[in-house]
Image (cartoon, rainbow, N blue to C red):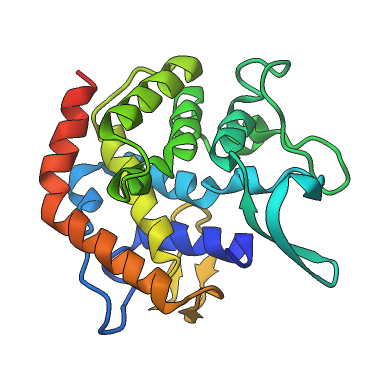
Length: 249
């Protein structure tokens, strides 16, 4: 995915300003940014933070043998793929509020632990909201896997129920909207987009620069795959969301 920080910041920006900050080229189909209409202001803030952290499971580990592929440029390592990074990110977020003996923690480059609880406390994120973020991270690959046929809709519902139960989180229908929104933002990272100068929803003093977001692995195959998934989603969005929401009842 190229630079993990840039990728994560771009997704946070897209989730925060989906209609105002992104302009696609003519080959990409328009996408309904439905989550703005279905979530309240606080939910959108939590969604933006979860989007920022969605790939955190790809970092926090200096053992490069665990990575399926990566590239080293000078002293920087670009993480492209890591097995089970969704589950690892889920555990990172829960480590300091659940069971540190059960869940693995995030290690900084000096091999000292990173305390996410302190970070969330500084951002006024409650334990309940921290659990929501953990579950969203753990689920962020499921929806595109449903659209591509890799897993069934029933499996996604079961996975969500299992992660929520493990985190001690009472399920709400709005989590379906949040999961799908993060999945869409992640998929869009395969495509060219233009951003504007807007403030970060999470870090108020941070201003996103006006610059093109260009995915280093952008290829006709990836673009075609995104176009196909977007077309499927646009045609089936309402029925899919209703199906998943009913599955939580």
